[in-house]
Length: 132
Image (cartoon, rainbow, N blue to C red):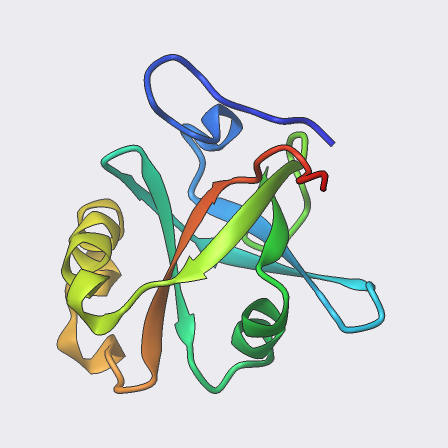
């Protein structure tokens, strides 16, 4: 795994210039499940949108450790994977994430794509392992 950070504040510089990221979330048995997703950057953070009734969301709620890599629309990874941590944003934090996504993807501006089940996740680089 590669830990990526650049001095410009972009936590995942390998994603720069790409439209999709491959998100690996983990089942309870540790098996990764890869999903290609739209993503957007804003204020040095990376945001993704999903639904609160999806398996991906349930896996992340159980284990916030994920891996990200640039990929094609079909999920073929185009670069190195990076360890990351996913955090479910509260409804109050949705506006910043939604604006970042709408700037990057014009389809996000269409109201019929929105559902009460939509949630945003913030991805940050995974920190060093905690030792006790």
